[in-house]
Image 1 (tube, helix red, strand yellow):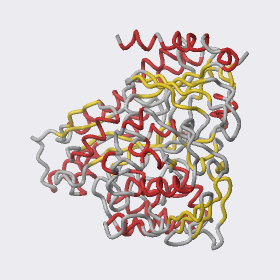
Image 2 (cartoon, helix red, strand yellow; image 1 turned 180 degrees about the horizontal axis):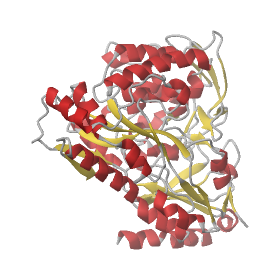
Image 3 (cartoon, helix red, strand yellow; image 1 turned 90 degrees about the horizontal axis):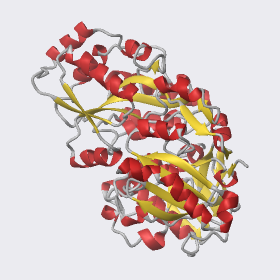
Image 4 (cartoon, helix red, strand yellow; image 1 turned 90 degrees about the vertical axis):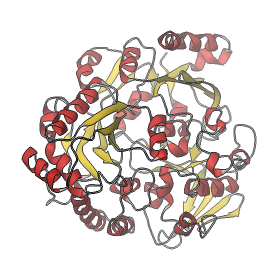
Length: 533
């Protein structure tokens, strides 16, 4: 039934186009999206941010070229003190899609919503440098002291210290929400609220319809402040697994695949590269550290010797060379950027005997199985998990893999039952973007890890815009993380992508993108894309 419904989507798009005169001129862009990205909302998912490129928006977005930011809801900004205080001038005349004027009140509300501990957003760490963040987190304050509306069109944000790259590296992850709607919702009820399946935004496309786990339709906003889009609509077609997405690319049922969840499997590349209507980017850098994730609050994984043993137990080079067919490079710490990594890291070369000894020394109970969660469903990643399972079994660690979608994963994060799993985090733009994985109190992704020295180094890394100065901080942090192993870093991922050439602007923008930009709304000029004549 599900395959039948999905197969009807192109026909649905054509019927919608036939019913509106302008639709024939503008046409429909169809983009694949993985299940679990919509209903929980932007504050609690990674893949949900793609809807913040078209429906919701931020003050600024990272440009598709990865080398600067595009003013969005903020028309301009200035810092009178070298990056400690930022004053944002908001665009005049912008309205929410329901006609309500956009004001500074929405910005103040949204930043506080992200930072509110009762909301529990994993992206709250992006605001950790804002004055009053710690007091808000520990309950001694009820809002961010550093965020103020000067007037309806001006917002001032004060940080705890000067951070000249804060806008370019942290603010880009923050979307702005309608206070007149979500302000009526209790913070604890934001996650999974009905708003996320009927979003009201300020972007180039207006939410039209959502069919659960089937598709989202967003339609052209004729009043968009950067110019009315040329496309009439975007349909995000939702798939549970990667193989149906690849099939839909081949049959031209979708124009773009999702970059969350694995990209084009390496084994599928030769076939797709022969299709003249597709642009295939076979070695698209992902800036994506891939790792074994542990719940450090579970006593089985609290001993660092257990985590080190698991890394010694896995022949990562062999997996890259065989299962992954050369796609990826071994990584021994958090940062995918070479300049942020120290040169004297422990390499954790394959050594099963050492792994067994470390597990014995740590008192590991080999009779107890480990619940092992993973998200990537394509065959290459399934084979990767199988290989990891085999390597760990050889030293006495019995993992039992379970494939879950993002919503189910977030649920086991929330109820504390998560034990161990296979994950990745896109942070190729800058090492600072790894903070939600490792800084103290970062829930849920830090998984109980806390080393104040690491926090100090991350903070110091943002206090200069000189790479050499910043590198010293991150390299020191890389050594600590290499020894502490809050995650068992495996490799830096490559993520091949493919796009249909009928959408002018789609493949062209990704060709100019230096790496897959995850976790942030991206300004990619979608309002200028069009269907090829």
